Image (cartoon, rainbow, N blue to C red):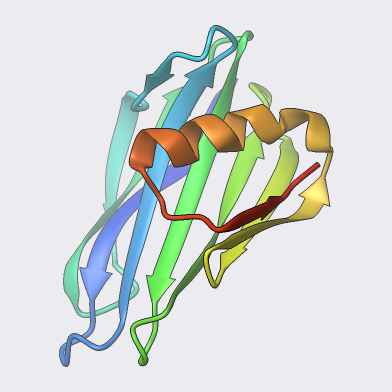
Length: 131
């Protein structure tokens, strides 16, 4: 099944606001890879930067992960991590705010996917409230 994911790195003209969207494919054997597929350039959220949509083919034994991080005016970072099945169904959404991860929507049995992504990207975390 094809899943639509977004890759973006953009910031405002003043540099006070920025967004980073990243996409990953996580296999059940904990292998993390970047998605490959048809790429379509799209307009970024902020003025400076670039964005693209990736229509990726996800294997049946893997999950698609969309990570969105936003830096606001006071240089605070917040965002969320979405975990999708191979069919494109949202399985888990985890919010990130003030160095804490909190489950928002979905089933907590997919928390291991979020933990692998957080360790892979070395995102600073004080507490995890996923399970």
